[in-house]
Amino acid sequence: MENKTFTISVYSENNVGLLNRISGIFLKRHINILSLNVSESEIEKVSRFIIVVNTTEKWVQNIVGQIEKQIDVIKAFYHIDEETIFLESALFKIQSNLLFDERKIQNIIKESHSEIVTVSRDFFVISKSGRRSDIEELYAKLKPFGIMQFVRSGRISVSKEKMEISTLLEELNQ
Image 1 (cartoon, helix red, strand yellow):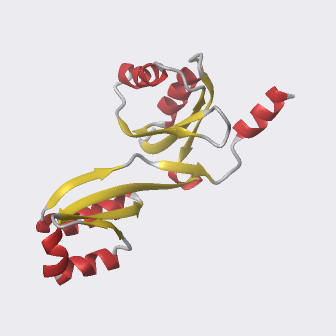
Image 2 (cartoon, rainbow, N blue to C red):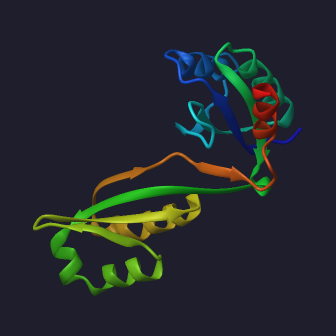
Image 3 (tube, rainbow, N blue to C red):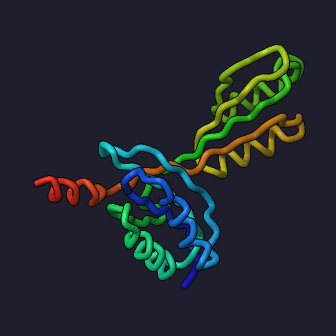
């Protein structure tokens, strides 16, 4: 089987230690987590982990099965990229003088559909949301000018199809 990028969605109760147990599942299998994001979900008092990995479908099926065995986990799903809508966000901190002295920086910001979120005497911050490749492209264009700080979020995603979790929780509440 060939390696692919998979997005794993884990719906869980928000309890201490679950992240450690989930990461241990990947550690035991020597699978690197490419991206991790945890937030509230569309369901009250339920958190959602978005975990991105590059592995085979057989391995991702095994991982999802192991994750679902965790006490705090309600349900876990996995999707390939074509089954989801996803984004990442990034912030770039750049020296302020470049914004005014380098016309090329202004063109890069405009062409990349980025946004300036703050400007101070010493620096300005650019925000960019999009696919990882879009963010990496902007990084490459800004790097020659000197990036003071850079941070990129983990992937956030929603599935194109209705998630079974809503139906499952409706059934449990009846």
